[in-house]
Length: 368
Image (cartoon, rainbow, N blue to C red; front, side):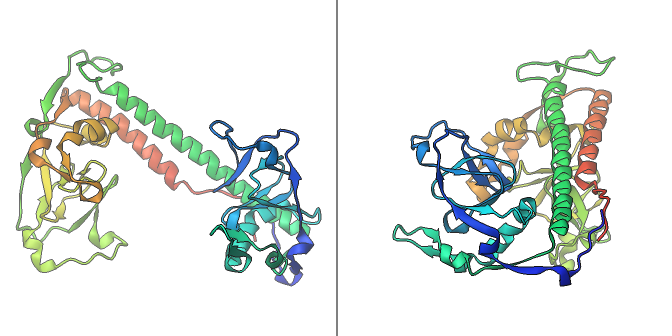
């Protein structure tokens, strides 16, 4: 797609050249909509007692503005009704409504202070007379169509990628429930071929031993990223200062060992991706003959965080802390190292696929 962005061809229009206000009562019992973050959203009628007959009808190619211009939406093909708090404006056929769908939230935001005022009900309402004073620069109609088509294509690619990403996340959640035994069970509902032994429940402190190793200033200082393991501080874009003179007191963490902070962020447990140094405020745990790829997704599961760990977390909100002695008493699943490795590899491959799709670039066939 070739888009010639020659600004000499753009033209200034008054708001009233593009939009004409109208108001039609809902006499047809049309579907109710509201303006959401990503445009018009159907609104369930359940639980609402107001008279929908007082709602406003909106036609295709309509600009909708909510109280104080907080909500901005454009209907391109939709037809329905909205709350009477909305102002509705018909878009002239000379302009591409899809292009205006992307543009108008920006225009309204830039002029918000000018077009809204406080009403007698202490609410911000739209000053329609001020809307007429807004000027909007627009390219020729065919350029509007090309730009809106490009943006629409990007939106579709984002939506499709998010759907695919959510499928892999749902797959992982489902597997976590099936690859680990349910409460009071000692065999998972699905297993790899060749494994028949019953699983055990062992205390966290019996599988993982806490250690504290210091005086290794030669190792790189690390940062802990919730859900992302560790990264070297010198490779991070975060400007977090620390006193290098105190590195002798920092704790050593070995690759694939677990890090626990007293503060309970998303469970508080992380797996190290490096050999390095971490703050002495953290607790470090090592397990012999265990697969960290097996235990890491379990420690980040809702079951572990919301059920197993919760009795050993105290405090409120950001002040929550984990009782280390209590943590060590939590019963966690245990099976042979070979089976752990199999399960760990599968879950790790799904994680890598999720990460790949999160970072996957779009390939758009256009030029400016």
